[in-house]
Image (cartoon, rainbow, N blue to C red):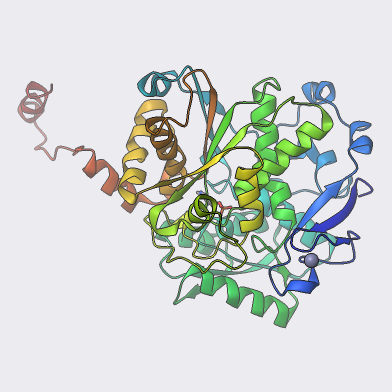
Length: 419
Ligand SMILES: *Cc1c(COP(=O)(O)O)cnc(C)c1O
Ligand SMILES: [Zn+2]
């Protein structure tokens, strides 16, 4: 791993040798989030846009030279990464835009974006010969870790709020994780998981704590730019809970700029739910994210429910350093976005995934987007993860199924009434 130069603390600026610390800068309790730094000249001698064009590996591992793993590390066999970037001309027309794409990470093996990070967690844990990996999660990070561990037979212990959608809990059980359903919030699960990991010496995957999760998540930015033939988009819309995904996208784009593979930084547009809008508030009011008090975190979009976003330093920088913005939308706007996105480009998203599209709708209405800008919306989770919210959303959209007798007459009655 000679391409990783150091881990830089984003609180005090101290630089740590890669093997000197495992997760955080030890000087600030659990808040010493660090950033993995690289030797880009060395990386450039190993990988190029041209070598990528010849590479038939369609997974995040095509970017292995840019990831914090050993060059000969074994990687899990699941097909993680290189999700489709669909053109969405009908949605674009509806919004008065010229160029809109939707990247569908609901297609990853455990049906959410989190597979990108959990894959790195597994490799790092195996580097350390860890017997057990643990994480707290609102559901998807856990499902991702659980599935990736199942792909290699790695033991793991999961902490999720007992209110997590049943589909996500079913994933954990079917992959045979040890599952702790916490009678409390995600924030409670997070604290407990840190405590248990310290007690038992488990490898800790937690978001905003383990610095390598950002590094897995940055691969989505690489893919977006490579899929657009290295013509970076103007804006990327993504929903934000803990802020690790938006921080990861920012990191990936910074890497590409440093390598000279793209020539400008897209604006990152973070979308938060009204009941869970810590970062929106901090950005809008210029508040210090280290001293700001937590918000309630209550939203229908369980995956972006975070009272105290764990990766808030990176998440705020992602927006301020790219001249982007935070957008806040209501739960009703999130639910309305689910069928709109599905009907407009056939990407079926869970509430947190659809929120990114809902944020674009709101940003267009508020004049934050120019019609000729090239826009990417990132769907982070599959709609099948949360059928209850889907059913609420289609009901709100006025869609109902007809319950009929098994007769052609009954069909005719329905067809006769079609608009
Ligand atoms: C985790 C998650 C997010 C938010 O990512 P953060 O890194 O917590 O900001 C958004 N959508 C889905 C579906 C997720 O699982
Ligand atoms: Zn520090």
